[in-house]
Structures are given as C-alpha cells and as structure tokens.
Length: 349
Ligand code: DAH
Image (cartoon, rainbow, N blue to C red; front, side, top):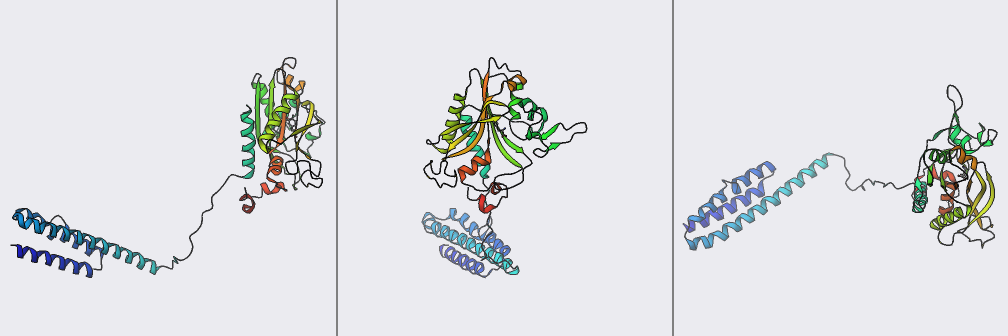
C-alpha cells in the first residue's frame, strides 16, 4: 500500500511537471490543472483517500502530498504568467508599437493669474465684511450712467468710449463701462447698512496696447451707513493694501473728480518695489507712489436716486482695476499677457 502510494505520488509529480513544461497553450494548461488539482483531479482524489490510511502512513503521506500540491500549484501559476507574457509580447510584435518611446505627458491646468489676483483681493475684502454682489454685463443707461449722476454730456457716454447696444426703439443698453452700476442695483433693493464688493468684467472702446484692453476687470466697493467718512475709507483701504502688499504698504489720497462721489480721491499705494527710495525705479518712476484706484464719498444725488436719505446716511465707494493691481503685484509689464494665454507666461504663476 505505502509503496503503491509513493509510486503514485512520484508519478503524479513527474507527469504533471513534464506536461506543464511542454504545454504551449493557456487552455491546455487549464485542463491540466483541473486534471491534477480540480475537484476530481488525480492529486485531489489521492488526498481524499489519505483519511483511510493507518496513522503512521498518514504522518508520512500527509505532508508529502500537501507539499506536492503546493509545488504543482506554484508550477501552474508560473507557467500561466509565462504564457500570458508570451501572448502579450506576440501581440505587440505584430504591431508597430515602440514601447521605448516616452509616454505622453498630461499637463495639469492651474488658476489664471487674473483669477488668482481677484481671489486674493476679494478674500481680503470679505474678511473686512464686504459681501460679494453681482450685476448684469449688459446694463441699461440708467444704472450705468444716470443714476450715478453722470450727466448726458459726460465723455464716458460718447460712442467713441462705450459699446452701446441698439434696441429696436432706442439706444437704451450698454456693455457696462464700470462695475459702479452694481451699487445702484444694491441700494435700490437693500436698506443700509450696506457693505458690498462687486467684482466683474467691464467694457470700453479702447485700443489694445500695453496698458489698455477693451475688456478688463474691476472690483467695486460700497459702504453705506450712518456717519461714514473718508476716514473709514482710508482705514479700510489701508488694511486692504496691507493685506495685499504687506504691513509696510501705505496709502495716500489725492483730490480727484468722479460724478458719483463728492469729494473724490485717487488712491496711491507706496511703491512696494523701491519703497520710495529709488529715484530711478521703473515701477513708480521715482515718485515712490503708484496710482491704484478711484474712490470717494457717495454723492448725495446718487443716494437720493436710490431712495436713501442723504441727511441720515452717508457712504464711501471705490473702484479698482484687477489687471492694474495684478500687474503691480506680479510685476507684469504688459496687460496683454493676461489675455493671450501663452502657456509659457501663465505657467509662471
Ligand atoms: N467707476 C470708476 C471707473 O470705472 C471707478 C470708481 C471710482 C468707482 C470712484 C467708484 C468710485 O465707486 O467711488 O473708473
């Protein structure tokens, strides 16, 4: 009995090792595996019979049979991998694929520098309590001009300066020339206190050059409450500029004119590049200051146009160009760099 078993085991080992070695097809290999290790396979049957053996024989043949099972299983697996690899290689050899070529690279997109700049600005402003507000890009004359106290003869209303949109009856609409119309829409709907920013695209009939584009972006700011003064404006803009440029950033006001504010100011920021110490600084041209935005105390007529009593409420407003600030912070000399979408430039931010 034991001799018989021994021979049987040796025979199974020999037959299958050889057959595995010789086989050249996966299908064949599978059949062999079933024949040896399947539910009714030769080795399986043998293992089943082990339970009828005397204890001594079990002790000898148990481990022997199991070792053979492991050995054959490994052999089947190895051969399977070998055959599969061969099949893939054969398939590849039939085609002209050159696997030594480097793989295609996939470029990862990133935020546009203008979006980065706008996000930085709006983040600081929202920390100061300003709420994001929006208005239409196609604005009516009333919200873009009249309600903002911009008189009929103002140059901004010239066809040379503005994209008017013809309506069947009258020229009532424009591509908004600034974001200031959003303050009107907000004040019409809301009672003070109002504290908003309106970021967005604006349009002007400007020829394209290093500092002009017919489409650009602004951020409008408006704060209406009781007793709002230029001091509030200066504090908030100082904090804003410090957020953008660092603690050393200082602002200065120069008298100016806008129809919708009185008094009106131009706001300059101390040159972050030379801090006013370099007479030859190309950024501030040696003046130590860089003009950044327009602002002022909201004109009483504008408040009245929106049903807000100027005897009770006052407020400040400001409007700034996102491109201009971004060019200053990122040291970009030509506004066209933002729109031409040359990846070599965009990648740098
Ligand atoms: N609307 C002005 C422009 O487009 C910018 C501006 C200046 C907005 C002063 C304001 C302001 O709200 O108070 O040039």
